Image 1 (tube, helix red, strand yellow):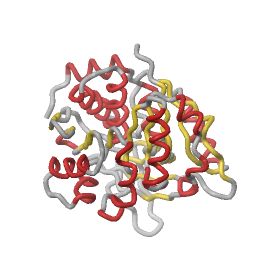
Image 2: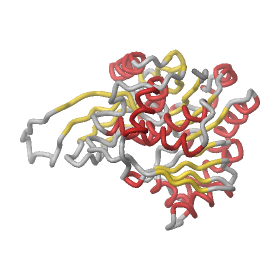
Image 3: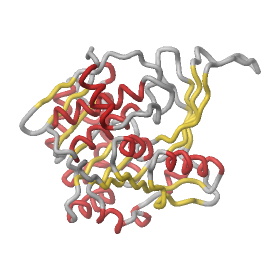
Length: 311
């Protein structure tokens, strides 16, 4: 199997998920649910978990609190084979966390605390680890800013790594300008369709992706929920449908797509095949609760993609 030494750097979140939640009880009322569980998440943490499932050697870097939530997050990441030695523990700052009441249709409103993610900066980045990676994925480059993110991506490029990023925040033109200095060093940007629309103010997803490519990104692979994904470069447009599944929870599906797509790149697959693997891993995660759902590996994800109908 092709070696992939991935470093995911950026946002780490402990998700606490509950389902199915049709509404919040009034006053001090209560409601019985089917499931409540905790899961490792975030644009760096969630992507790291799925990459590890798909056979990559994964190290993850970022900041978490020196609290019980941080301890649990480290434990959950390590259970999936992610090397957590580069996570910094911040005293007096809580670990980033979300409470996610999952609706019966899989929608996931979020109650979120930024916490320690907001304390991580350029000086904290593990430059030696970046130089050793074959793939550097920035999860939430907006926390660093484009200039700092670009510096880290350039370092990865100097050592022959493939670079990628996924934005956590909602897209808007101001945020685009904040992170755009990193684009010339970014091989793959992995947003969702709403972020592309917010960044570019384009109603058409493909036009929006082309606008991001024109700003310097090598390839934009954008997810679009139940409609699958689209991959856009300066030369081509590739559309990949979503798989037909019963959705339980969409938490972490974007991170799972990123992981599958990047693992495909490491295996030398073409862009369409990378997007198909990304869509397959996202579909596997969406069938259960939490961004780490599913005991699949690369072979199982490929088999799923080969045998499951699309929408």
